[in-house]
Amino acid sequence: MKKNIADHLYVAALLPFDDQMKVDEGAYRRFLQHFLKNERFVRMGGGLCINPEAGEIFYLTREEKRRVLEIAMEEINGKLPVIAGTWALTTAETVETAKDCKALGVNGIFVTPPGGAQDVTSCWDADNYPEIWLDQIIAQDRAVDLPIVTHPVGGAKPPFHPGLPLQATLHICREVKNIVGWKMTYMYDGFRIIAKGLRGLDRHVAVMGALASRFHEYKATGMFDGTLSGFWNFALDPMLDHLEAWDNKDIDKARAIWDGGLSQLHEYIADMGRLHIRYKTAAWLCGLIPLPFMRAPMPRPRQEEIDTIYRLLKNVGVPVIDMKETRLAA
Image 1 (cartoon, rainbow, N blue to C red):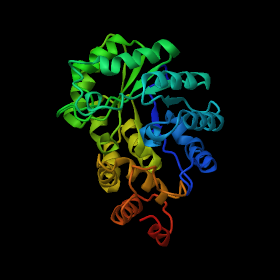
Image 2: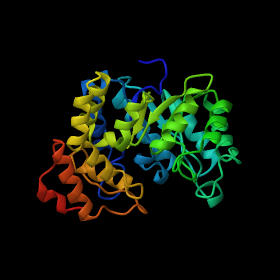
Image 3: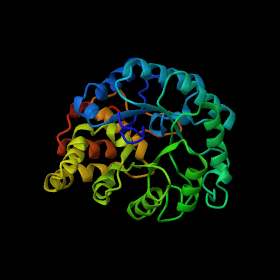
Image 4: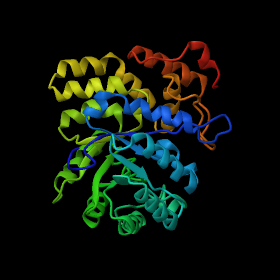
């Protein structure tokens, strides 16, 4: 295992539900095994993030979050590093959720900014009021003293949208020494600015490229320590092919994989207003989960999305379910 727990390829693991929208424990165990049984993923530094945004942490009770993590820890059994989400609607419950994570033996926690009023969500001015999130991170840090990977999202303007701006990023990292990884949801220009800022800190904070639709550009910068991304949920092997080609300095092969359909698949999935719906739809089309539905208020996928994702998955050689089964979701 690498020295920094953030220098890994983390799957932001989604969570399958049954037709009553309860956690499908059997399907979840099988889904996790999809990653655990992939020897190349393990060898290349794979990891699992349990209860991330892609796992619908916002719509889980504390008891459900704990149960989901219990299942994951049983299945993973030390084979891969595990970080776990702590998000809750109040800071008090977020801290208690972080304690649950520590009690279950995770390698680190995954922290997300608060939800609630517009003051702390879409209208948050992170540069001037970093304490909106910083106070909550510090409360968790004091409670569990574990490595922290951040999911910095807020109302920043371009080039930092939808991540945090540079000043707030550096301030938070300097205040909390347990922060070891910074998830990068930024587009290319913002990514470069934030990555250079992180490189200027007095310790290593991993640059964790998140948008797989930008992996090709991220790798070209040389600022790609690891990743935490939901795109792994459905495109594990072609993504490993692409990154492995980069690691082997075979740029022609990396470009062929990228231009051969992987970039088109990722660019379609990466619609920020439909991102998590499309993650789950794609994983379902790959036969990895039994149903594509998310808990309300997340809507169902549209048939147009299903058909497009199906075609793009086939284009990159990912095995998919029978076409007749794809009419069941819309």
